[in-house]
Image (cartoon, rainbow over all chains, first blue to last red; front, side, top):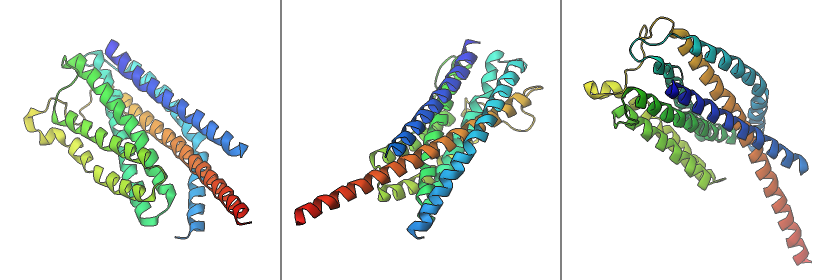
Length: 36
Length: 250
């Protein structure tokens, strides 16, 4: 069971982390564009 | 194609990405929930036991990676043909998201291998070609990051992205090419899944593809904003340079 949890856990955690990175990056760029 | 038409094309891609963000996000949330429920309820395999449930995530990650690299090639080809920066942004974004999915495929595969073969890795043809595919598109991303803003590098990357696609059919048919020496299981065919395993596998494919599309849409949007910001900074630098030149001429 540990292998299954590891496979799904690493997949979901990585995809959520990347999604969070894209959300933050989009907000930062939009703020910079608005500021100018 | 004129610069005005190109700018209109760029704006259309940005608008499309912004419009797709929310619906693909909701679709992803719904499909992920349904997929996880289907995985929990899926029957245990008679031979491998519970570890076989990695099947519902590992091959779908491979399909998403193939899609990412396919779109890198399509975006590159359209960029070479039309010269529109939006296609280059699509190619670059698809390569990054594709490498992410390929990385996860290369992580989940060894986890499954450790539990069934007793070792993390084997230099089996399928595994070796998957590693090669990952290196090919990782090199694409390194090339793009080292040559930011260069049109010549974008054209070279487009050709490289198309050529790299040759590894995908080799990778897919690696089991047949290896003959009886392959350790990796054969590609799934119709009827190769046991009773009750088809639905969780289908949900896995749909949820993973929805994740791919949603992340790609967001990545394209970020790339568009970066381009707009870089263009504005360049215009400001030009203006400052002209004003400086004007002062010296006086």
